[in-house]
Each structure stands twice: as C-alpha cells, then as structure tokens.
Image (tube, rainbow, N blue to C red; front, side, top):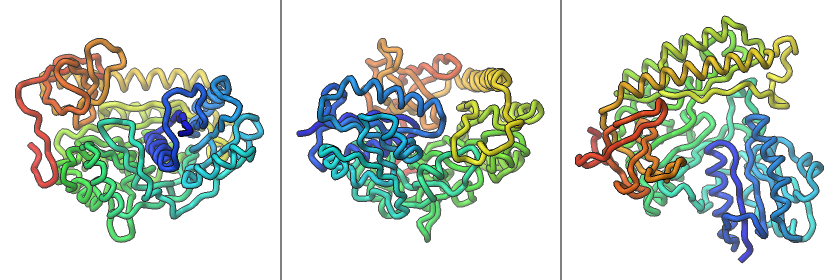
Length: 446
C-alpha cells in the first residue's frame, strides 16, 4: 500500500480536517505512517491565522525535502494553501499540490495526477461541502472532534478565516447525531462540536440549543463540549440547553479580544464591553461552576494606553479561568492591513503590553486555582504528561488540566480525584475511592 505522512498545524478544525483527509486516503488504499522518511505522499495541513504559523510551515517544507524519494508527492493543504494558492507552487519546486479546505474530496485523484507530473492548485469554495460521507481516521484516542459548521460570516477586521474557509454553513442535525453515534460505537464518550462561531449553528429549522440537546442525548455520550462560540450567539435557548443537558460540560471558551468599546468597533466584533459582561453574567447565573476562558489580542492598530487599560480592567472584572493572549498579526487581505500606517502600535509597546497582560492573566488564574485545592473533580485521562515520569494528563469537565499518577489509571479512564496541588495553571490530583459520576443521556448530573 502507498504510504501517506501528514503534519497538522493550527486549530482544532485543522485537526478534524486532518482526520477527514486520512480517512479519505485510507478508503483510497493509502496507509498512514508516522515517519516522513520515504513516504509516498507527504501532506502539511496548514494554518493562516498568524504570520509565524505560515513561516513555520515554509521552513518545514524545506526540511521535508530531505525525507522525500524521487516520486514522493509533496502537498500543502488547509488555510495557508487557500490563502497563497499558486504562490506556494512558485516558491517551492517540490510542492506539487495546493489544496484548500473544500477540496479534500478530490485528494486521491489529485495525488495520482501529481504522480504523473501535474502540479495542481485546488482552492475553489464549495458551500455545500461538509464531508458527511467521510469516515474520519481519529487519532486523539479518547475524544472526537466533530465539525458541525464551516466558514464564517462575521468578518472581524483582523481575521483571515472568512477568506480561507468561505461563508458560514451548517451541517444538518441528523448528520451530526449520526456521526456522534458512530463515535460512541468506536468506544469514545466525549465529543467536541466544532465551528468558527459554533453557537450560530442553524440547519434551517433548529438552533444550536437543539443541537446540544440532540447530541447530548445520544446513548453512551458522557461529555459534550464545543468551540469556539461568539458572544452574540448565546441565546436563551443555547444557555438553557447548556444548563439542562447533563452531558454538556461546564466550560465556555468565550473570545473577547479587547475590553475597549472603541477597539471592539475597529475589530468589527459586533458587541460592546457591556454586552460581553452581560453574556458572562447570564452564563454564570445559569450554569453553576462554569469555567470561562478567552482569547485576547494585544497591539491591534490604534490601541491606546487607555484602550489597553480597558482590556486589563475587563480581565480583572470577569476573572477568567485562563486566557490565550496574542500579539496582533497583520494578515494580507484583511481590512486591518488597510488601516492608516500611523495606527500601527510600536513593537516595543506591544511587547510590554503583552507581558503585562500575561502576568495579570496568570495571577488571576493562579488565585482561582489555589482556591480550588481540596475540591473533587471527575477527570478523563487523556494522554501521558509532557514532562514524563509517572504521570498522566487528565481533563476535568470544567476544563482543568490535572496530572494523575500513571499507576492509578489508564488512558481513556474516568476518575474522581481530589485536587491536591497546583502550579498555578495545572493541578495534581489524587484518586479518591468515590466512583466518578458519569452522566450519560437521560441521567441527571450531581
């Protein structure tokens, strides 16, 4: 069997797309290999959200040349492929395939054409494509990523996604439920529903609240998560479903990007600081113990000291459980790159603000985590800990990372643990005799 090696960069949607790609190629007779050396096909599934992600890929393409034999097909897939198109062929003579996120169905044929010497760019959008008939080759082991929505209609001024993934479109509820049942049959009990603004999902007759209820009711499902939502789309229906469906986890990743109304307007985020606070309040009122994490951008064009202070004050007031912080990265083709040059924030100012914000986020997270010591959490053991030793990495329903002794569990097990220590960002947990409560469809949560 011909072999395919695949590397994935970027977000969870790219991880899910890589699983679809491998599933499609497996159906076409390809065998997946973990080693690029001598592979018949080498694919790099890419991200275009920030410039450093693209630079990493360009460097990696150079490295991969050393692993290729004479007939190896080298291809670039994903958002960077969609954004750069033929420029990738022009800049790298060994790349023979450039395939955007809506063209994976044609990959077997495109690879065969590349074997015959053709160099192809396939970046047309297909607003009907959801890959519903693909059998994903899942490699997470204990959980399944399920794309329910592709594309985005919000068009924030800094974001390349609408230009690399096209307009928003949602899968049908029945298709998502069918895939969820298949996941359970494969022995997985946690699913993560994926979309660029996932809570705006709507299949024409049903909203995201209905989707959460339907997926959460699938027999055998123990945990339902979703990412990433938009603050504008937390309707009463969605929040009620989160509160009432026991399998939906008590965690929301709620990107804010800035705490300044003026900045939010320049970013075209379509909500205000006050609207964000209201969304957080509604979530916390409805869902006991909900964990809230976020994304924040520093150094967006025109950011003043006062506007940055607004972000700091919002972080303090909300008290996020964690935050992913980013320095603004201009992306060719987005409205932000057409803003007046005098709005550019000097790099030294960006660096200083980033450092200050990161210190504040970590301080708040550490304080919140210290207060949780002694509490008990159900955790799913996901993988070996990065630092090695005798620890496994587990995740609680409210998205806490907990290290547990490897002799206490196996990957894929659910445990009840007591939180006995914290580094400020992660916990150590000691298994307790109490059996972990495992809510499934039709059961009520503790």
